[in-house]
Image 1 (cartoon, rainbow, N blue to C red):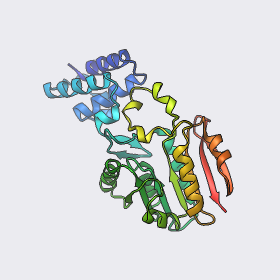
Image 2: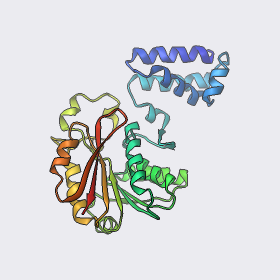
Image 3: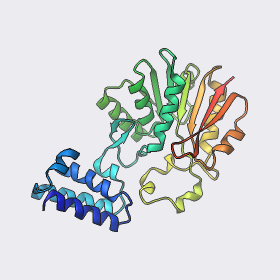
Image 4: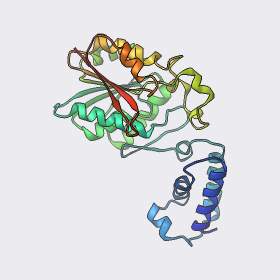
Length: 280
């Protein structure tokens, strides 16, 4: 089987499995299976796959046809220019969250040696993206999941980025409370889907840990807890930035009291998604 034939067959089978981005995913699977770059793949359409390459590709394809996330199959995800290790048990970073990083970097513009706390880091995506763009920042990230913290630490080591990781349920440990009291920016992408979404999310989303997805009946259980904790602990002028469901970000704004300023920002699709709160 040639690369051209394999690419066509994989794309056809992915389309038949209901995967919208079949062409793109076929290229990604083929690149990884034969260990060639995109340009090498396209420029060598008649190159024959070895028996081992065909076996690997077939195994991966069967898993993807079963709607296992592509990121789990390839054991990596790309976020804000970084290649991250991911796997079952750890939330896969989403493209829309890159805009949250942009908002963080805008908040930090002009601030020398900033101190940043990310709450609920998962794979470490947000914390590592901030540290990569702001090497002068002191960045600490937390998560309640030991598995997620291990993955995040692995990513930090692979990328050579000095981010500290602590286990905590939001801000509910003395060490994290102390850190929160001295940072200028706290950022979080908390679980924000309403519980009723369990019945309608895609098969791929169902592979993410439920603790990273669902935020109670309204979707705001963790976000509201974090907002109350942050309001007590942050110092004047410090900022809390959160990514929320476009369906409930207005409700989160309306329930946030005692902040000097509160703003909503849109994602690149024009949906209200991000809440910025400034401590007075």
